[in-house]
Length: 174
Image (cartoon, rainbow, N blue to C red; front, side):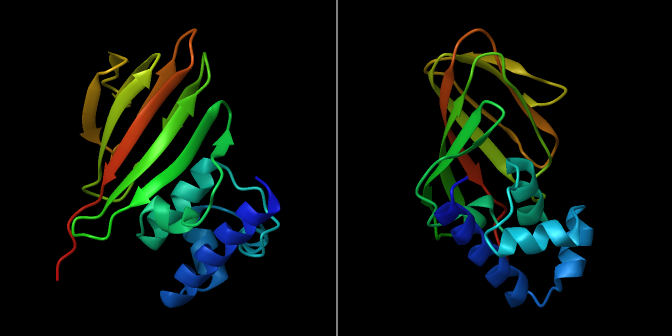
């Protein structure tokens, strides 16, 4: 990630942590990362993985998009690139991402907030996706919706796969 992306991520993370009254130590402990690493991320000097960002979002009980809002470039690692396209402001909250997966990629995802759903539509290529114990084969034009509050996975074969991911978070009580 380049410096502007890291700075934006760090500011968003720190603002959300402080708004919830969490100490650096508490959030680091709950997310299972070193306090020094969390401090670096907040200062825009770290190099967090996508999994680390997801874990922090889950611990803060906010959508992933809240941490990467205003990041203009795709975030990527290990053959997977993710770019936030739009964030909804309704209840339930819906965020939309463009995702590109390199050939022969396996992306294991940790559970998101309880009640979260993911819908993916394959734009090009093919992918196996879904809850980790129930992967389904999908090709261009096909859509799958599954519970994202359980471990889930994306796996490509010999071709690139591009997909549109829609994440629907649980409805918030008023």
